[in-house]
Amino acid sequence: MTILTDLTSLDDVAKLVLPETDQAAAAAASERQNSLTKPPGSLGRLEELAIFMAGWQRSEMPVINKAQALVFAGNHGICAQGVNPFPQEVTAQMVGNFQAGGAAINQLCRANGADLSVVALDLDQPTQDFTQGPAMTEVETIKALQSGAAAVDPDASVLILGEMGIGNSTIAAALACATFGGAAAQWVGRGTGSDSDGQALKARVVDTGVALHSKARGMAMLAALGGREQAAICGAVLEARARSIPVILDGYICTAAVAPLYDTAPELLDHCLVGHASAEPGHKLMLDVMQKTPILSMNMALGEGSGAALALGVLRAALECHNGMATFAQAGVSGG
Image (cartoon, rainbow, N blue to C red; front, side):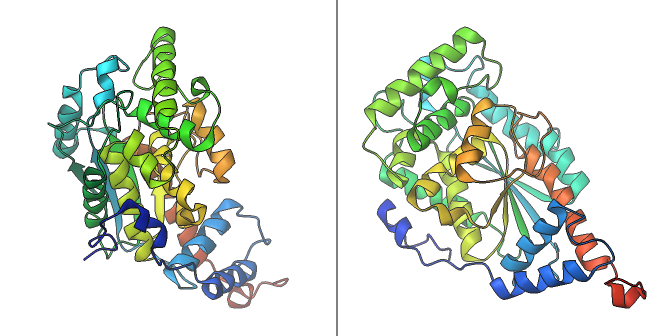
């Protein structure tokens, strides 16, 4: 059973009763940080990350016993508009590469201690072209949400999320534009290698789709403009929240995937960190509105969960310092 097992309407996502962070545990972690052998605040973001983890793990001394990484893959009908220079067959080929251990995400998960699973979502059945109608039916959207939720390991200490899907940078731009407004051109980037003409085409396609589905908000927007991997990411985020599992989102496409959740209720993403600032220009715009500060900025734009997996190493380091450092009293150091 997951939080979404009995979901029959997208409207019911807004009605889910989900846990909040444990303020007492976070406060205890903050007090511990101020007692460690260092000037208060001198470890900067590492301290914030440790306190964040303490609140969601409901423990003054949070740990990462198991880090789970999930990469969801899907195909998109919008590719019929010529928005991507690569054929859709590449999605399945890259899934095979993930499964064989040959992609960047495999190496980064191994290096940072995450267990990787790849979930392919009906790759032989692309979604519909959102310039002609909704990308998915409500039933298809719910099925993908439930697939994402079911993939979450209830024993995970932290969840890393990524995606793969030819054409999904256009999906990301559409979801971002529909959620946050502005011109499509400001949300469109190079994706997997689009030139200036390709970016202009993507912007026109996004403008058309967003205008067609202008009345869709929240989870209805996900059905209208999203894809199966975006819906699965949303489902995994909701299931993780139900189990108080902190989440590390990847870059632009992964963050845009949860824009419908943000549009439904921004607090649905309170348990989510953002692993890195993508080189895609729309990511910074989105993060500024969402008030999310990425852990890293490495000029990456690969996707796959690569930036989130890399950020896991920083999160582990934050907890090693938090749990392993001596207090002033323990070390016999004056000034604590």
